[in-house]
Image (cartoon, rainbow over the protein chains, first blue to last red):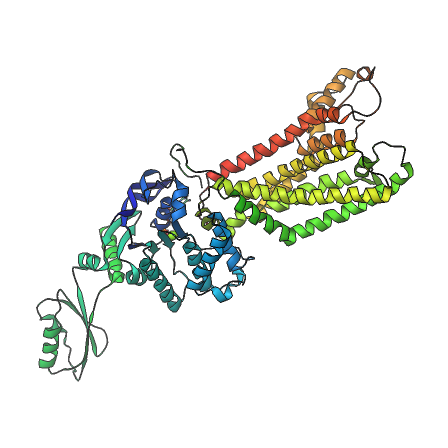
Length: 313
Length: 325
Ligand SMILES: Nc1ncnc2c1ncn2[C@@H]1O[C@H](COP(=O)(O)OP(=O)(O)OP(=O)(O)O)[C@@H](O)[C@H]1O
Ligand SMILES: [Mg+2]
């Protein structure tokens, strides 16, 4: 696998503001990479530098072997970009909007029409392609944006907050489409602050904080690292008047026990102690109604990481 | 807003990639826009009004004037205490039309959030800016050409004479000069569309500049000339007039008016004050086209230079701008 996107020591300053600070990033071909970070952490700035739309203050960028600030056309021919709040010419139809993109890419007319039909069908917009883009709903606009990205048959797709403003169902559908890109062999760079969504599609994530990638790896690896492989067990116990906290805390490996509701407990442990916990509940005379192991996701990694940063600060 | 930039590195690929795509799209937008239809209607109505009135006046002099056709453009009528002619209306409406086509060229893309999407296609910013400028200029040129043909046709029908070759030549040069004049206002409007994020602000700024040159500049040049060169003897008087003229030539309106004067009134022998002594031995009558053109040449190149300067300024400003909304 070769690196499709490579950034070394990338820095961007806006006057006194350091938007991106000594960023190193390598994304191999075919990967779906998630740039994750709170507002203002430098995700969009990084993307703009990768596309050659903003000059880096220092550092090197290579996208598909080209330097985006020296040879932007070669980069932009092969990289599709969906901006964070994508806009269209409202008075033109969806098809006309795509036609303009095709012309800017120098596609021949016949080829353009074939491709436009193809991407519209793929995004489920074929039937509404003659409607004005101004009359499109938020979800339709976003899909039109992805159609616009796919029109040039990119090798890399860079999507900035692609699910922003979509309802949960629309977001899921959109994530499915992003998975489809991966299936086509397109390398995807996705910026978002919606963790569970990133988690659902990304092979690897980079956690951004104040212009730096502070954590990087697969979701599992990250939770292992930040949370120390924490396990959370939710219990529901009936027929038990007295509290079980003491009993459960005594189980080896248990770190913390919390009462979530009159019947519910939350047990945090270093290892999977479901068996021992169940046994204790039963021997203490409780009726175990349910027991559920929660796999911790990015949400927790994120929350925990920023908690620690705040504590240190 | 200003981005820090490392020294400019050489860019690869033609800066004009995508120029035609942008131009054609913008042209189609302009030609179908309600804004343009409104302007066309306005221009057409005033043109027909002034030209019909001029033809009415000229019918009495058919056969006496060798440049009857050019008079259609310049003959002024009186309505109350206002003198008006076709060229007067044109020099009034052209800046308005050009500003209307250019004031939201770039900030309109920002506000529609289409700019970053368009610039992420394989084109340089140069192509976007130049394409928009060309489309505006073509739109104005098409309108003016149609207008020019209409007026000529009207003249042929109503006056019953065919324009001479020289008149056609002068008419075409008049058309080109008008396009250049329109280019100045278009480039200015686009400059403001890059500078100001709000289209209302850029429109207002462009109109303010236009108003300044149309109304205040003539007053201002008079005052400045009087203060700097008080007219206490005939020589000082001449110096004052010359200073005032030099100052007024900083206005595109003056340049355009002088070009029109020498092109459409062939008997114009000099632009500016002429002393009796200079006229001694001069042949009365009209100048040939080449001489008229020579007379107006500095003004003509001045207008072109203004267009280029304004466009270059717009270009520099746009290159330095962050494209994110
Ligand atoms: N043109 C600019 N001038 C000055 N500062 C800027 C400019 N653009 C961005 N910044 C600053 O750079 C930092 C990073 O911004 P950026 O837009 O990259 O963040 P982001 O991670 O994309 O945030 P969000 O999730 O809100 O989109 C912010 O502090 C922002 O204020
Ligand atoms: Mg952003």
